[in-house]
Image 1 (cartoon, rainbow, N blue to C red):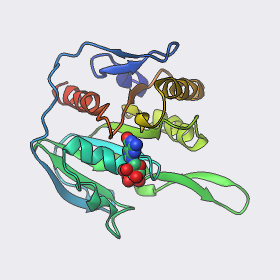
Image 2: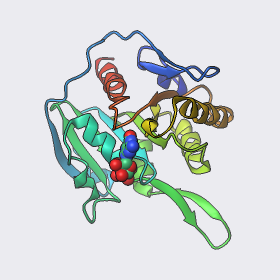
Image 3: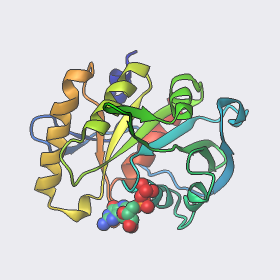
Length: 231
Ligand code: GDP
C-alpha cells in the first residue's frame, strides 16, 4: 500500500484537515480513549543502524527543523518536562535517540534536516543516518513531521515531505505552535502547504494541528499511535 494511503487511512487518523475548507474534522476511531503514558524512559542514542535497539518494539519517529517545537512536543506527549533534554545534550543532537514508552512502543527523536550550502547552490540535506533509519528500519511504523504553523510553506519542508513520500513510510504532518496566531491564519498556512505538496505526493497526507501551550494535538497523536499499535 502506498504511504499516502496508509497515512490517510481513516482508521489510523483521528483529525484531518479538509483539503478545501481547511477545517479540522474529527473522525471516529475504534479507540476513543486517549492512551495514558505511564512510563517514558530514555534507552539509547544510536549513531548507526547497527546501534539501534535489537527489539521488536514498534517505533514512532519525530522529526522537524530546529526550533519547530519537537522537544516541547516530546515532553508534552510523555508528560515529562525534561525527557527531550536527553537528546539535546552535547554529542546527542546528531544521533537517533530512542525512548521506551509504556514498555511497549518507542518514540524516536530524530535529528532535524536542513540545507547544505555547497559552493554553487543550496542542496537539500539531512543526516545520512536519518535517511538510513527512515528507509531501512523495519520497526518504524509512522513518522510525525513537525512543521511550524506560523509560516507559509517552506521549500525545505516541502522537499522533505516529497522525499518521505517516496520511501513508502506512513507519516503525519503536525503543524506546531498553533496558539501563536489566529485559527484562520493556521488554516490558511495549512491549506497553502497542502497545495504545495499535492503535486509531489500520490495522495493527501494526514495532517494534525498542535500546541504545547494548549496541549492541542496531544490526544490525536497518541490516538494515531495507539491505532497503529492495535492494527
Ligand atoms: P526544537 O528545537 O524543535 O526541539 O524546539 P523546542 O521544543 O525547543 O521549542 C523552541 C521554542 O518554541 C521554545 O522557546 C518553546 O518554548 C517554543 N514552543 C514550542 N512549542 C510551542 C507551542 O506550541 N507554542 C508556543 N507558544 N511556543 C512553543
